[in-house]
Length: 316
Ligand SMILES: NC(=O)c1ccc[n+]([C@@H]2O[C@H](COP(=O)([O-])OP(=O)(O)OC[C@H]3O[C@@H](n4cnc5c(N)ncnc54)[C@H](OP(=O)(O)O)[C@@H]3O)[C@@H](O)[C@H]2O)c1
Image (cartoon, rainbow, N blue to C red; front, side):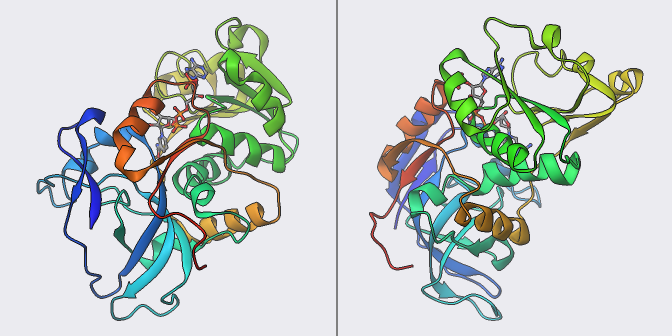
């Protein structure tokens, strides 16, 4: 099969489109024909991309762990999925991913594809939406009437966080670049801050939740004073300092997103109900993965960049 394989750690130029062995599903696994997958540049450097859980090297790993596609083969003992079913999902980082014509997935990593979306838009959902969902609802227990400030609100994770928070009837403050301000109002922000002209900590106080979905820079360290006592600071890139949390009387959270079939299904239902929409800023063919990563790393690409593997229309 054709696949993208990473030939050098953390180097988007070394994402090579080439032949790779087509995987075979073992017991409890399914083989998915990938129609579309989306890009998460940070994974090129993550430990799980380069080592198995047992610590063995993973030479030439296939990246991309968000997929939309169709089940084409099943191993034994897979009960509740079927061949020909359109699915979407988020697969483990320590196995070969979905920047390929075929990939292996576990049933627990897959949910029915939202019927209202094509594969390209579906592929923009799994990792980013699960991260946002888990941050807001599993870790922060965000509820109606609370205030949340989201750094990186126009990014892959941020665009879902804004929409989920708005859907949950929270007051949503989005912080991002000047070129993303109109988008953030459209997605449901009640207030928008341009980080290039305004220091958010000068104008926002007493927030219940802050989500740092930027991952670089000093937004995390400047966020403590924005929170009310008992508030929650959630970071996706590095753990916030516990001593700072204690001195400000807030709770700090750092977590790694987990795949979750029930949450994927719930998110799919919200999409089909018209409450949530993925944002795709660019679609490129699989063979141009390298350019896709470079474009995402260059910024000014709100939401996700998607790699299309099979042209639609497709069955499912
Ligand atoms: N822990 C986990 O499980 C998990 C899961 C997913 C992602 N992550 C991490 O979460 C972070 C966000 O991921 P993503 O895919 O959403 O990234 P992304 O799509 O690149 O989004 C980041 C957004 O932040 C904007 N931005 C840049 N500097 C900013 C600043 N100082 N203040 C406010 N906004 C700023 C960017 O604008 P421009 O691009 O236009 O500059 C972009 O809109 C990354 O560090 C990623 O590795 C962690």
